[in-house]
Image 1 (cartoon, rainbow, N blue to C red):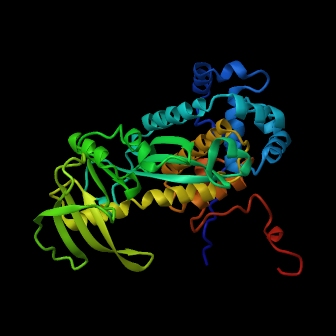
Image 2: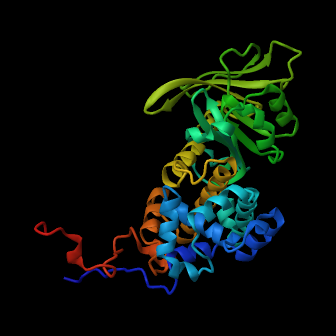
Image 3: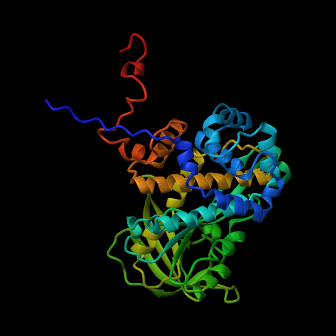
Length: 409
């Protein structure tokens, strides 16, 4: 019998941590630090060391300052090959509090632009799913709430005894990459940020959002800009039917009509499309009412487009359950923003590695593999290409008998 050849990831002279950090241009970090004034507050702990430390906090899922600083101190040798120094607890805490979080924000967009130049297909994204027939870019707008501890009450009070921050995001549906992000307190309503989040959407493009973002004045502005939108209709919306559309052959389409608001003084699009359909949610059929300014799409297209909006819920679930957005390294607003932006940066880097290696498994599995070998000297691309395949193996890292407990072999 011919034995199958075992495929092992090759060795590298650099650690996995270093290979990931090499995707962040160091000269760009220095330039942004000088531009935002972060470099003025750096002495022995440089801005580059600050970025590397917070990247490691996300990749290792550090639960606190002591956890992160001890880990970096114990790996100070490999860390020095990156040109970074391990921080003290007070030094890192002070950097998170004093250095402006605008540096992390600008660094994220700079790295995204740089990776887009290196690999245009990465930014363009894939064409597939329910929205495969739409050639124009599709954007999804939503928010996620990050629960904070009581120490944040002075700036992030959300309810009577709770504190929280809110992240407003516009996600590109094809690439699943953020196009616009705002990190702020959770006190204000979603539609207060609607204009700001949708400002960069061009004519002919599509934007999807929940009814929390419904503001008829804003919907009219999008309509005048030539932007197509799909959302859900509010239950108390007062309207009259201007035209009944032809009945659909799809039995799950219950109603399709063109409507106008009853209040003529209220700023709103002149005509809107109202589609009532049965949609499968959590293996159950539910009746939902959709609203759009496109009068030519089929009612099934309207329903399918809105279902695509749930991709941003999957995105939020991935970054909140995988990356470190539960235990924060600081209680002040600046430290929270630093950590959110660095989590998005690490997500971007991992997605780029997934794109280059043609990773076929989940994002969570990619993260856990990288975290497990963070300080190992393996070729990262070779590791991701062979791991999880039929011939993939890690037997060169440990002997086979080490995988068994005594007496259970």
